[in-house]
Every structure is written in C-alpha cells, then in structure tokens.
Length: 199
Image (cartoon, rainbow, N blue to C red):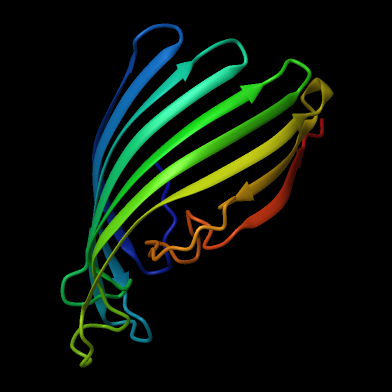
C-alpha cells in the first residue's frame, strides 16, 4: 500500500476487506478501515493534529451483457478531529451511494453515467478550537450526476474522453476531507482527457 500525505504527517492505517464472485458476471465486496493521522499543525511544526477516519463500504459489480456493466456502492465515512478542527471537520459523518452504468462497444466507443446520492452531517469549524470560535452543525442531502463519452484508439494506442461532472449544476453544502483533491465538483465542470501509449 502507498499513501501520499503532507511532509511530516504520520498515518497508521488498518483495515480488512473481502471480495466474492457470485458468478462470472457478478462480484461483491466489502471493506472496513481505520486511519489515525498525526498531522503537522498549520504554521507550527511542533504542533500535532490527531485525526481519525473510519470507513466502511460495500459494492457490487454486474456485467449485464458483453458491453454493459452496472455498479452500486454504499460508503459510510466518519471523521473525528477532537480539540483541533484542523480540517474544519470536528465530528462529521458522510454517506455516499454511487450508482453507475457503463457501455462499451467493440468499435472502441464507450459511455458512462453515474448518479451519486450524498448525505453529510456533523460539527464543523473554520478555525482551530480554542481560538474563540463556535462550532456549527450542518447537514445536506443531494444527488450529483456525472457523464462521460470516450473512444479507445485502435491497437490500444490510447483513449480520448469527454467528461461532464455535476451535469445538472447542483448546488449543495458539502465539505471534502481533502480540499486539494475534491471528489465532487461544486459546479458543472466539463473537461477533455486523453492518454497515449508509445512503444
């Protein structure tokens, strides 16, 4: 396993996972993990912020036909940051339910659509505790839709794809644990991606 954190951070990660193949077309899996993070405090290298992340997820993959695949997942995450609130999340629970359908054609054309239900609630703070600020309880539930179209180049030379995240431009109140790598687009975002393989 390889984890990327900020310089000076120390993480202890423990987990267990199981996966089972029901048939040639159906796969099930589950995972439970805990991550204890000792993070260097902002602006003070001698201060340490202790954060705990608990994660439980279960997923299913179904190959409906030769070119169609379906997937469903439920993910529950709890982040607790007692006494510090370095990440702005003092005690926050997040439940995600992504449902996805993918289509692949032998010509190389591919398409995908994903609907994700997000439910987040808990205590948030904009500053470190002890600095005189007050905690705020926030909650929100919403759906986000993403879509993509792509094409695989002949002889596996690469792929071209167009993605649109947050297709319906949904407005919501949501806090990502990693603000530098958000998992949900805060507004409609379209981008083009390509990969090329050289031999």
